[in-house]
Image (cartoon, rainbow, N blue to C red; front, side, top):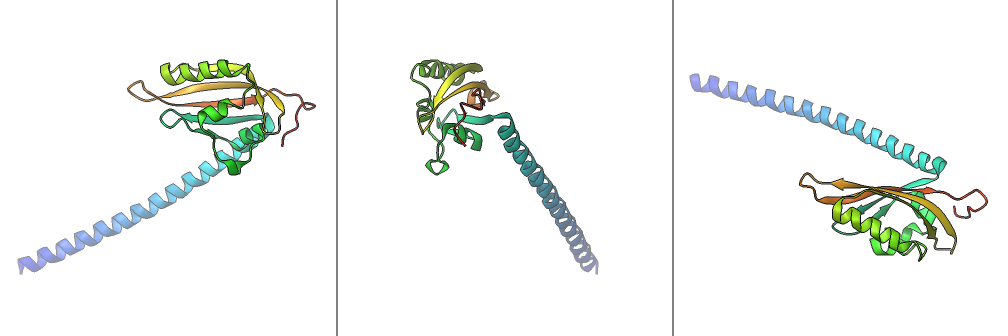
Length: 166
C-alpha cells in the first residue's frame, strides 16, 4: 500500500514538474519573441539612421579576415550585394592607392595590438567614383586580451553635388 502512495506521489511530482517546465518554456518563448521584436526595431533604427546620417557600419573578424558591411556601406562602394561580403584585402583595394598604406597600417595595428583608429580617406567605388570618407574603428577585445575583431563605421563626407551613388 505504501508503494502505491509513493508511485502516486512520484507521478504527481512528475506531473507538476512537467507542468512547470511547460510554463517556463512558454515564458521563455514569449521572452525570445520580445527580444526578436526589439532586435528588429534596433536593426530598422540603425538602417534609417545610416540613411539619414550618411554613415555605414562594418566589422572585421580577426580570425577569418572577413569584412561584414551594412547596406549603406555597400551603397557607398556601389558594390552589388550579390557579390557578397569582401575579404579584408579586397575591401582595402577600394581605397585610393595613396590612402591604402594608411588603411593597412591602421587595420594592422588594430588587429595586432588592439589599437583603435580614425582616419580620412577616399574610396574608389565600383563605378569609378571617388568618395571621401571618415573611418573609425574600435577593437573587440577578448578577456585574455586577444583581438576578436574590429567594429567600425564610415561617414560619407561628400557634398550633395558629389554624391552619385544610390
